[in-house]
Image (tube, rainbow, N blue to C red):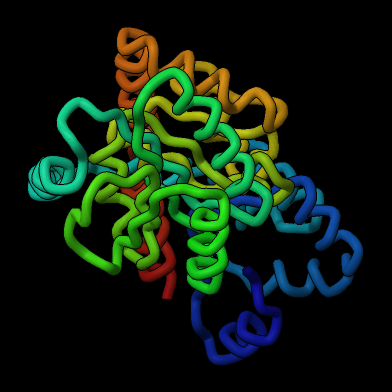
Length: 291
């Protein structure tokens, strides 16, 4: 988010400003265009904007960002590397909470409407094979209502904050913050939320860094460049409607060879797009030298 008063005061006090890892969806660009005069004044207070992609740079330019203030550096989230300690912790966690041989699907950053779709897909999936759903709602205030919904639907649910194994369950509710990255290392595949409802999707690159095959809905405008790169490489399956979710998950769980190929493609996309952090740090040095 950009705050006009903050940028204006920073400029007045001689502070250099860099907007790093900048993205701008078509939807957001339309919103800024409705207050075009304010947007142009705000952009004039920015020294540099490090855009994730060429489309983002084009939209900033169309809204009045001076060409001299624009750079295209890539997405710093591609620079994520999974440390060996985290991989070790994920293996230990899987041994602790997942019965041997049981596949794990993670529903990450889900929104209202998507939990229900995942639960319906799980019901259809479980008619064919056993699996565990790790369900991670996007916002903490939704932990309790999602838990109640799972119970009301007849699922055996364990909350992550309850600790321990606690017997066989169908769903593990990730009702805390900060562990989503760890749980990607436990799963066979990941559904990334905010995409079956019109929220524009969420960051899929952390799951890609783990080499997970990915599934998303069609609403991906917040992460279009990353989604296009992953889908183009065969690492991401984009479904168009909720009724496609169960068949997609069933097909992927039944085909370990395809999952492995998708995972390798995801890791390759991450490697091929690295370098944005170095570019952004170079821009920071440029501004510091300029005074």
